[in-house]
Length: 330
Ligand SMILES: [Fe+2]
Image (cartoon, rainbow, N blue to C red; front, side, top):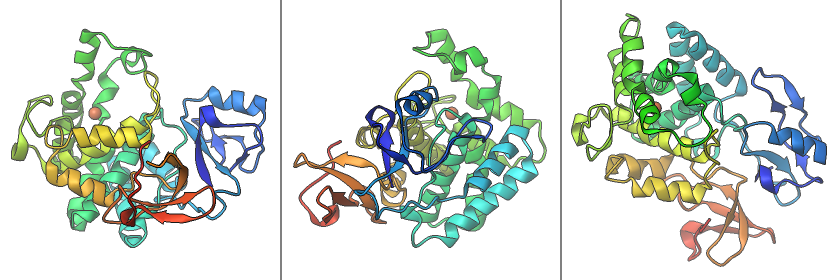
């Protein structure tokens, strides 16, 4: 299976995933052949693309990092702010990812509803735990990280919905309001005695930048809680590759370049380095353009060097980019 952006879908393509609405109801079944009507239907959703099956991608299998059921359970726990359930889900996510350490770099969860804030939070938690495992964190530290990453944007609940869902550019005043969400989040969690201090730390500091240019406090370097820095880079990357009401999804290569630009300014350089070593940034089955102008599909990721995966050409041959002069340009 491979991932195709909404604009590149054509009528003969076969869907490789169920398309569900925000309530989990299946709208278009896996296996359906696309038609003008179905493509129009897809456009009504805030999704960037879908997985399809074809002969080019017939030997690419995508295993979700975390089952849909667990993602749904985690989303419900977040919606209800059920701290016990959030902690249970965090532990289940860690168990699942730790148990898959040998192939974690090749897994991902199928993204369909990018627009969903809760789903974004779960994706950030999954990437953060993947990065934390790479950094050698123990279970206890991973648990703190997962819970904080799941709740990192909880403060957005207190930002007026008209601002959160506004299509188009925010005014300076609206932007100022959005930038209060770490403080709002901290205050929501402060009234709950079941919340760990590490969770509050991540929520409060996940927009602080390594060079002191972040918010709310403009903290710098080691003064920033490490788990907040891990969440920060995963949050930025997931937001870049997701479609939002005010922007299209960035192509992976552009998102990578933006993250690389943030090295040492937005992000702790050690964490940036680990991010590109351990977090599967190129999703399997995504089409990319190589530096020789050929198009290829991401076939397999290389743990330790996520910037240079194995790709599959249209001819069927495989190239390990770690051992090639070719690179991915878009
Ligand atoms: Fe945030």
